[in-house]
Image 1 (cartoon, rainbow, N blue to C red):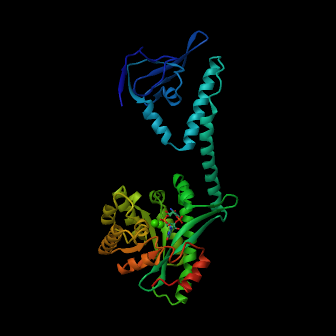
Image 2 (image 1 turned 90 degrees about the horizontal axis):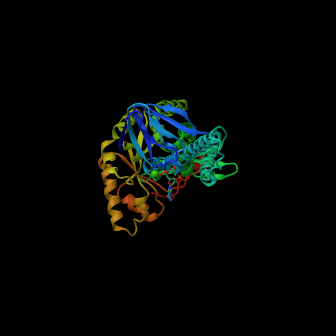
Image 3 (image 1 turned 90 degrees about the vertical axis):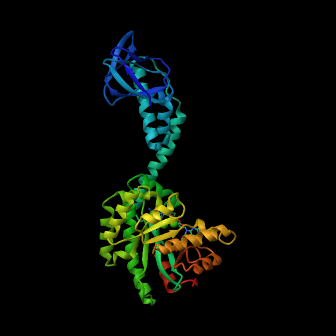
Length: 396
Ligand code: C2E
Ligand code: CA
Ligand code: CA
């Protein structure tokens, strides 16, 4: 970023000039004025930390006012590209607000000057409006879905390849919207993550999954299962940042009377980017009595480092490794190495996305204990899971 110094009385830009830069006042004072009916009217005076000239570079219009230094002033220059890049990366709702505020400001300025400028072209606003409003509506509806019964927790069984029994589940949330129908977690979880809604959504999942675990554990014991079942719950970055989350989750589990270590918190590599923060969070999760599982292992750029540095209990090998095991010698070798490495570190391994018998046979030969995928079962409501525990498919 460039720096510009002005002496008191020097002009930064004049009304009508083409605009290509905005300025942050690091130190000094800038007076903004405009010619109205032949006389110079001062609109405002800006000081340290204020921004000057941002409007022109956002919407490509000439300067609507003159900026003059009233003291010796030091400015940091922000180019059009630097600013528009940041705006284009911003949330649609934020873009809409910036656009509306600018239009309102410009139209107020033009009224003040007595010229009736035509309103700005509508398409851009309409586009932001469309995206922004759709998202805001969905957000409001998701908030409501939490209060009604539209968010359901389904469970995908995880099979123990040694015993041939169901060992545990992954809780996967589904939204059954009254008019839009089924909305996939891929869509609404990312929306919830952008807002703070992910925290109440996450606690809702915890509540439902804990209550259902009580039922499922009883069914399993009646069916002659010895080891306790486990429940894996997906945890997003925002839930990790929220320091209340773990204690509230622990309280929810305690109310069921189940041991907390039957619950595994699934985190992804993306929030192990800050390794120290991830280490701290895992430590806290352990102090609360939960197990921690690394989801989608092998898909990120720093998988190995994450696996070695973090104190994990479980690693889930991503579906991508399983997809073409049959005709890809390289993938077979890679899966073999990855599973062995996780085992060497003393972690439990769950291989995800197992759909075919040949894939199952391959991972069994690696002495991998757990598998998750359509061959064992898709995600389903708790009633169907009860039936599955009593009558597991043959995967041993
Ligand atoms: P994930 O944690 O990787 O979950 C596994 C996804 O793979 C699920 O999709 C599951 O239905 C699908 N899957 C499982 N087995 C197979 C298989 O054999 N073949 C194929 N092709 N797919 C399989 P789903 O339910 O659509 O969930 C998508 C993602 O949404 C999840 O990915 C998880 O990241 C997120 N998610 C779901 N529920 C929650 C939640 O309650 N909280 C949070 N934070 N994220 C959630
Ligand atoms: Ca998961
Ligand atoms: Ca996964």
